[in-house]
Image (cartoon, rainbow, N blue to C red; front, side):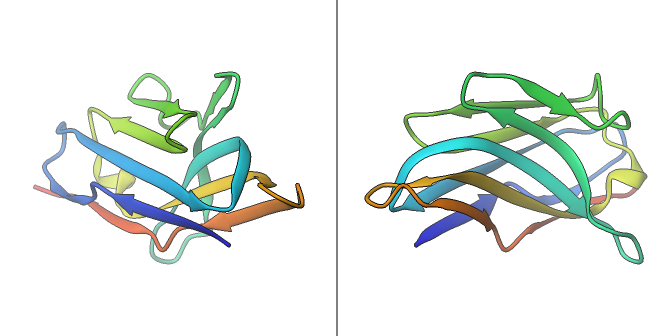
Length: 121
């Protein structure tokens, strides 16, 4: 029904930058919230950042001042600009979208397949 496609992950040195993108497609009427979550080996999935349709943002304390989330409502796309990357940022990053479908207005909550981010010297 709704598909999310992440891109932009890769290998970067500490202090470097990456920009992640996530595009939602399918029977979408409106996306209320999109966000990024990450999961490192041996750890639980954790919130990184979210953004609502009206532009309100929320960040994990560990990424405040370094990461910036932004979105394009018309394109159903969310971005995560990651600067000053640290080894502890290494994880699989997952895109999440919550909204309503085009015809039935049913709520949905979908996840992308994830993109690997590795920060290492």
